[in-house]
Image (cartoon, rainbow, N blue to C red; front, side, top):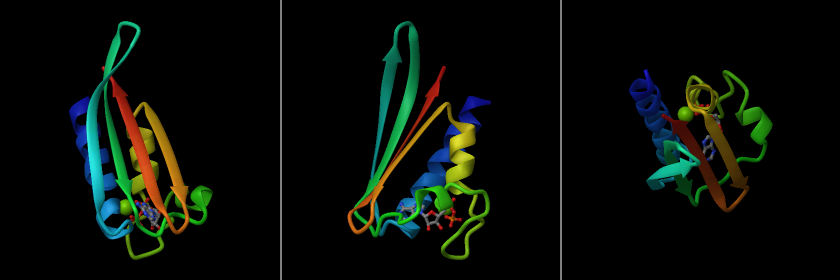
Length: 99
Ligand SMILES: Nc1ncnc2c1ncn2[C@@H]1O[C@H](COP(=O)(O)OP(=O)(O)O)[C@@H](O)[C@H]1O
Ligand SMILES: [Mg+2]
């Protein structure tokens, strides 16, 4: 069910902003592509950033004592997943679910 997928991704990515990103913002918007509509959530922080994005996107990898499934899980649950991170500057993760 889309609702469960969206709230799970929102809670995981929101928690990452707090736990790893030292706090940040979320922007939730309606998106449209041709006749399709969807929901996009963009999480932004100005924390330490991610040195190795490939490693961070590996199931079970955690730099703290998490489960290491937040990023990979969110990627699987949503239709689109985009991660941009600059070490020392911060991280942006954007996820979209199409109806
Ligand atoms: N917003 C962020 N800022 C900095 N590092 C992050 C951020 N989000 C994720 N990471 C890095 O990616 C790793 C994997 O994230 P995740 O899959 O959510 O696992 P967990 O949060 O359980 O460690 C984290 O341990 C952390 O090193
Ligand atoms: Mg996490």
